[in-house]
Image 1 (cartoon, rainbow, N blue to C red):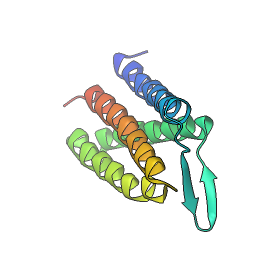
Image 2 (cartoon, rainbow, N blue to C red; image 1 turned 30 degrees about the vertical axis):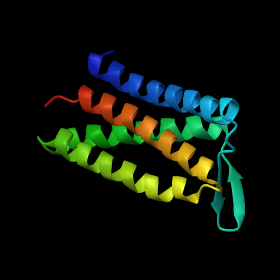
Image 3 (cartoon, one colour; image 1 turned 120 degrees about the vertical axis):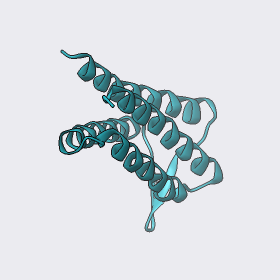
Image 4 (cartoon, rainbow, N blue to C red; image 1 turned 135 degrees about the horizontal axis):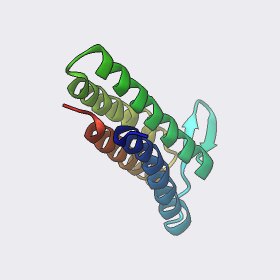
Length: 128
């Protein structure tokens, strides 16, 4: 397995680990009910959902970076701009639906932590 592939796998694993750790701290230690409103329904965020979302985001980032690297010589720069934009948009969509101030802040922190791991690690894995 190449160093690049190992680093990208580490991005997926790291995203899942930081999501799990963040969930544990926010939910179990701080007692924040991570819940969001979707329409008229309250959706409680679980550890499994948090880790799955982190894994999906990391794999999507990996695949989009790999595609851009094949299509253009500026794949890393283009991907970074897209990834940061997606992270900012996710902050507007996800955490804003939190049911309480604590839920909104907690969800925002989870988004930022996972985004930092994914963007930082995948960007570092890309050749310039």
